[in-house]
Image 1: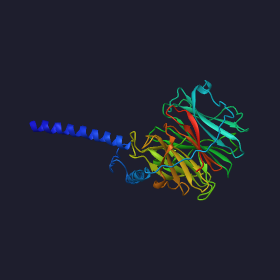
Image 2: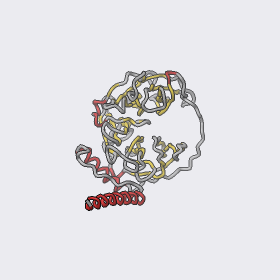
Image 3: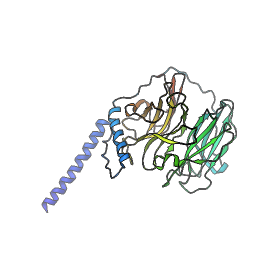
Image 4: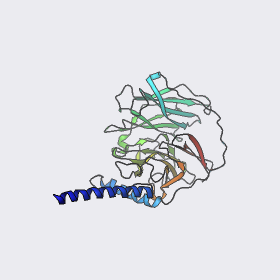
Amino acid sequence: MADVKQASAMLKWLRVMLRVLLVIMVFMTGRLLYPRVSNSTLTKRQMDLHNDVQTAQESSVQRSSHSSNVGVSLSVVHDIVLWTSDRLGEVGIYRVPVLTYTPKGNLVAITEGRRKSKSDENPKIFTVKRSTDGGATWSPSQWIVDDGKSRFKRCSYIGTIFTDDTTATIFLMYVYCEFCPTRSLMLINSTDDGVTWGRPRNITDHIGKNYITHPSPGYGIQKKHDPAKGRLIVCGHGFHDGLGIVLLLSDDHGVTWRHGAFVPSVPFLDTPKGYFDPDECQPVELPDGSIHIVVRNQMVYRCNCKMIMRSFDGGETLPRKYMLLDRALVEPRITSGVWYHNGTMFYTGPKTKTKSGYPSFSSE
């Protein structure tokens, strides 16, 4: 009996010491140790990707991308409210706006009108406004997607807007029923500069259920330079059975789609604070044809800053040695915007946890 009590006491002591060591490790390194995930938890494909990304973080964390701020003086030219909460369509709040240019040089903005409450998981309408004078004035709202009075969680989630300049087509890619056992990836488009929109098209089978993702709120790109000139690229976050980001690619102007680069979280299924969990992502093409992606660092891995990833083959891969942490870009755990124009990279996003917005510029 005494031996049992002694063994029990020793076990409790060991547990306490392990917790102390973990706290010391977190304090010294600013992160948690990686868990070792067994094959019983992940498939072989997922296990290989898990280990690849785990190795990547050990090497890439030694570096961070460096931005040089450019002396740019900013002023607000126009401050225009596009949507306000009202009873039209029983909308409680408007959230998650996305914006793109049109083939004719106009602007199209789309947002979610959330019914009942501000919760992500309530039925919504997607509403569109157009501007033909550079954003000075806007058209009345037009509904293009309506969840009706669907049940809780069985609703649409706005995603990525993008333009194919070759075919003069505007697309919106979004996900339906994200928290259901089976989610659907949807695509809707306009061929008349955003004036009218077709019926939503389900492209789930193009991608395969393991890669059905939530297209990140923001804009997609069409490659202007080689490699893969003309390719449409959308960056999404989250999967049917795990977390991480994936690039969705189309080489036939949006008719068919497939997945390209895939970067899973570590661990793949559940990521506590401090672990590697890439989330909402915004790609932009640079003059050399590479794709620069600003990624939401959901679990503030290694720093309270954004992740940066880079593709040099049109989105087929995201090499691990180019996965960086940019400490100049504060991470309040929401999506951010990025744009490249005439040699300058523009970034916009909250600078602090209070989510006070600010713009930043880099000439690199």
